Length: 401
Image (cartoon, rainbow, N blue to C red; front, side, top):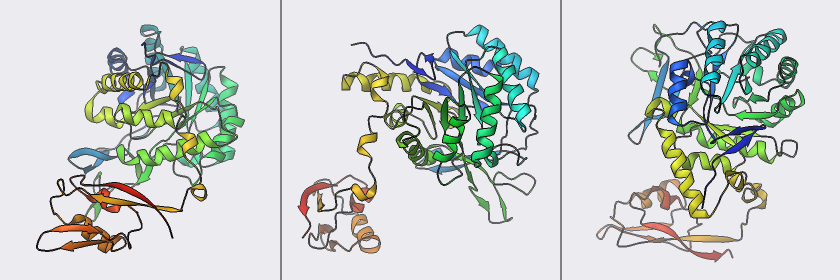
């Protein structure tokens, strides 16, 4: 069986759905060329504009988790620090050298006139698509970035300005620094956007230096609120993708999924919730461009196992299984079962249930054996999550009295 990883996004054919997102991993010709040679289906080039960034040093920080250095990643980086003319030349050369790949120009203006001019210039150099960056959380001007992306009126206005300057497909990149993304996304579509990209990074402070009372990254004793990315933000990104895909006014709108994608399985979750392609940055910063091999091979193997020929068949497949909390069944409990052979007697289930749940596990000190008190157990399954040996698993379903 042939497994087709190609997909059409906003009318543009893509050889595979794996793109680099607009960031420092796609910031010059040499880097982008190596990524495309490595097998990425497309690139969203680092955001360009008339504004030229003057960056701080250092500008990154991480939170480690489970031995993984980039459990969460924070950055102070803004849009491109190269002149607009230089960036346009790079885009022109990339499209000439890799005509079969998808090249997206990420743009950011400060006025309607700038948005229109940037759209016109990007189309002239031959890119396939535009992405409007309404979402960078660490811009030094309130007229740019996520401050704009929280305003329905500004997003609609700037999408209209971009549409005035181009006939290319236009994506509006959404900020997660907002309660509900759908109203802004609807405004973007009303303004002429063809699709939505989500999410950008989340405003954050990662760590403090408690000796000197400063924060990381430390820039001469100071720091600033800035964007958080990496695997830690993936659940938040998935929630926003779900909300966009399920909204009646956004159904069938192409979505580019972004946020904490490291593996083929991570990407698959975005497809199942309605995304038609995915964009990656933080994982590339940690592991390099080579991860696209694992993404392509892993997704192809999954499709083979499921008997799925085309990627289109996976898009949105999980949406019917996600319902409002009021629609969930509440008439039974699933009791946990403890596997005595796998249990090592660590007591973590007992402590967690006693101090954090419903006191439904007993503990025999001499034998170091836990037991489930079925009359008290509510079936929350905290015990299954804290067990280090996976010795506890779901068991019998019992109707509530």
